[in-house]
Image (cartoon, rainbow, N blue to C red):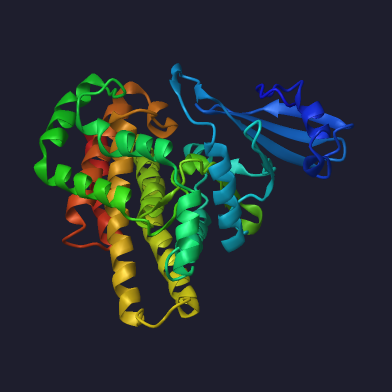
Length: 402
């Protein structure tokens, strides 16, 4: 395939046969199935199996958003994703899929098949929490966050990696969708009519807007570590057997504040808890709201374990570690707030909320907005994830009962 066409299920076997690195992974002469599974907005995704049961995934970037062919998106994002996955795999092969090849001519990334896993969001919606996933993701963010920081890399090497993973177009989308559009009138926004007073109050809340504005500045300016960039429960595979957790689909990845990835997970746990509350599942909501603390505790434990291996300890004594950890954890709360608010007001809603009946959905969405506001503002009084999650639980429960 040399004419830069988009893949189809019918074209996949020939593509594999023409790509030696992939012919060694699956047998292109004995393909049993090719399933297109991508339901995202920017990619074609195929799961390929041969007759011996071996598999791989092909992900091809589209030149535009599926939802809006007039919205062009750089296809070079697949190259950056390959670089990011390779770097994250080097630091933590336990929590990311292996990369088999990257075809720059056709913007096709070939990665490990994880068909024996399930998407965490779907599992949460089905009532299967997989508590262990929060702990595993905490370790993942610690390993990649430390390993691509000034503590894990010599500065010239880090600067080269920052340069090779610049993701201007997609990070601008994050800046707009997460930090700007929900707080203004914008065509991407939509919400239930009953939420109009809540949205108006949120947009008029100067304390909240200040926190979001400062968080946006840090997201743009801070190259602390190489982020996954979109670490929500829909981009995490889980499998109870072996407590397997894999983060995938990091095409929004770039260097940024480490707390952004932690906050993304936290936000989606709030959304999952809001759903449980709306369904009257109080115990499950409580179970889910214990996970942000598990996430951050695991992150801190792993970061501390890695600290003695820092590449240049000359001016990084242990006191620096304490300040860095405190800052990352504080950041994670405001990024959780921004990511949660975006899912209620802005573009790209989540099934946790959208599949609720309208009456229950309004209470759940209102609870998320109010809980997010508390995460952004109240974190300065008590940054403990336990305290903030208790407050979140109270707000979600009250909103669900209204």
